Image (cartoon, rainbow, N blue to C red; front, side, top):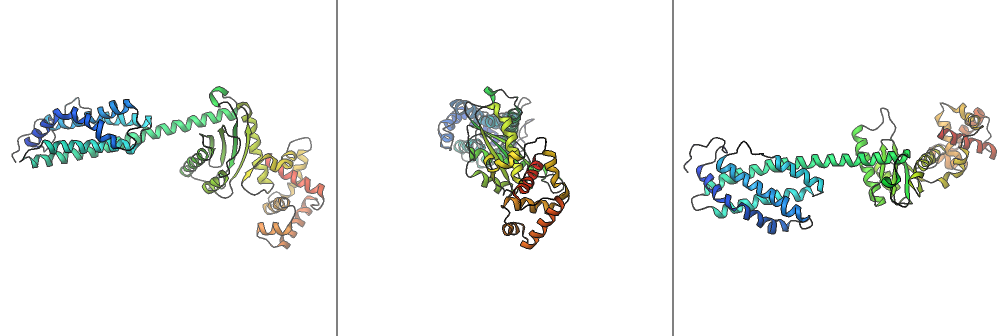
Amino acid sequence: MTYIEEPEGSVPGLSAGARKLAARCEPQVNELARRMARGAFENLGGYAELPADVKDVEIAATARHAMRLFLRSAVRGPRPSDDGLETFQTRAAQRAEEGMPLQLLLRTYCMGTRELWRELRKLSEPGEEGALVELGDALFAVQDRVVGAVTESYLDEQSALAAEQRERRRSLAQALLDGTAHPERSLADGPALVVFMHLSGGSGGPGGRSPVTVRRLVRRIQAALDRAFGTEALTLLDGAGGHAIAPGCTAVPDQLPELLREIAGPDTRLGACAVTEAGDIPRAAHMVGEVVRIAQACGRPPGLHLLDDVLLEYHLSRPNEGSDRIAALLAPLAGRSELVETLRTHLAQRQDRRVTARLLNLHPNSVDNRLTRIMELTGLDLGAPRDAALALAALALGATA
């Protein structure tokens, strides 16, 4: 094959024969783009569901631009006005914003490359095998660059859109929980469910979760809530838990507690309360948070906690003139976490020493010894209903202090 000196700015290494074949194909670009839009692309799964303007204008125009840009560069070399990959990156971002699946977008580019390669093969003449190989190598090298740039631009835009969506939901949830959101823009007509979650292992400090782990955890919880409620839940979450609002819902789906335990750990707790209008959300959010804390403080097992489950404890925890004195009854147990946990479990299990021992992995005699020490330190007689109620109230008050 005879090679000639390359024109300034042309694609390095292309022979005169390769440029001649590319020039023969260039007038076919418009017809080739029409055939792809009406035939080849229609066979792609999901393409038929795209809006007409996206199919007939955007995708066809992008395919036409890509083929013409390649062939023109092969024939005459790139010009200073060529925008390279910018057009493809811009349109990839637009497709991400419109919700077009990435796999469908990339398949249109790959199919366009394949159809152009077929056209080059069809137009090639005997003796142009070497030129065809040159153009094929150049074509697939360009495809690699374009697909990489398109993917990066699409994912960047998708990430930005997801961040905007998360911030929108977070801001709206914050406004609803604060009582500052206008009902017409924050909550559709009808009820909503306010949920509080306390995640196991969510405390700070050296044993807490890393920022990367927290972000992954919050995303998984958000997905679980959306799936369980069948709607977009508004959330305000961190590594320790937080609140969620599910518009149009009135009860916690049966599968949600188990989903959250699988994601965040077996000690995960949640409380829930239905409201009829946005103005009730701040009160409900405060209440469900207290219900969860009281349930934990009083030794209730992890899971879903409703107000009716801790109705007495909740009532006993309401502050009044005697609250400080009741809470102070357990002050002698400060620093003795094993005694507090024994008291909490014993009261939660209706003072059944054997069940308490099993839950705490102790011998029943050890439970008796701890209970005796608790009564010595506090002066409470746990066998007396009145003193047992005072101890329960002190635990409840400690949870809401």
